[in-house]
Amino acid sequence: MSRPKKKVYIKTFGCQMNVADSEHMAQVLAQEYALTDRPEEADLYLINTCAIRKKSEEKVRSLLGSLKALKQKRPQMLLGVGGCVAQQEGGRLLAAVPHLDLVFGTHGIYRLPELVRRAFSKRQVDVALMEGFPPALPRRWRPGSAQALVTIMQGCNNFCSFCVVPYVRGREYSRPPAEIVAEVQEFLAAGGKEVTLLGQNVNSYGRGLSEPLAFPQLLCKLAELQGLERLRFATSHPKDLSDELIGLFGELTPLCEHLHLPLQAGSDRTLARMHRGYTAERYLERLAAARAAIDDLAVTTDIIVGFPGETDDDFARTLEVVDAARYDAAYTFIFSPRPGTEAAAMVDEFIAPEIARERMQRLVDVVERHALAAHEARAGRVEEVLVEGPSKKDAEQEAARQALQELPDA
Image (cartoon, rainbow, N blue to C red; front, top):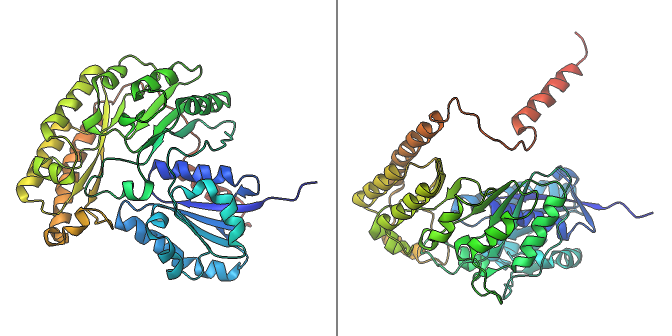
């Protein structure tokens, strides 16, 4: 009779890439650890971190502080931090948090079982970056899982002046297409319906592969797989959005009518200082081409407010582009200086917080106006939806209802 598995709790901060990384953590540990959603019973508590913005990093440090009491209560529990903040801080994080047992970077996931075993006898730090795409990780799809996040590449070569990704995730490497197809096939065989392909810039997929295969060709391969009902991808870099890729929106049946196309700024001066590689005019031309390829294309974006040196005129140009783009939704952020990036050194040009906040509100007002118009235009229509399961709100209401039923009569 095999002994019961230990329990691992994984707290995830950040984007879909981090969610996928957390799934990989659970998979590589599956031989010894079973996932739990109850942190108080964990034998291993892992925090998967995000370093894109300072606020995300602050949340991690706050959580680590609050976990001191749990660590004291359960001294046998191992506490580890992985992901981008771990990659960025390395041994400094271990020195700053005495109750922390393990720090592992973005590539440390692939060495995690051995690191955990070593951490029982000695605190561990592993922030080494590998060359090439790491070996395929095992995936065990749960029957009934409707959606899957599939990583097709890692790292980034763009070095935008505000972005820490190339420093914490390394240079850009594409995953062999045969591995991607096999993983998606296994997911579909388990009853899956929707796949989202992930990469920092999926449009540049294929560079460096032994047998060249561009991203549009990969989409065509996957779209042919039986059982795949929905296919998505994130994120697209505007400078690499090709006509071939745009044309697929009207050709591939599973490809969802959604494009996430980060703008970041609408001022050409700011875009140049960000090293984005396109102008506002070029961005809007690519967006218009995408909308011409398919009716009712949903478009989302990322926008940074208060980039160092942003003038009133620069911000006005951003509002003009956002107004012209008519986004369905936007992820809007106030500039956050990230260690090691070019923009972090532009201290003399940082925008006053009160000015950045005022600009942010003006931006949100424009985004929400167009988003509301897009939603109102769908009123009365019949739409296809994918049911993932009960919403968190419904689950909470059901738990409250059952608790009330269990109360003794007055």
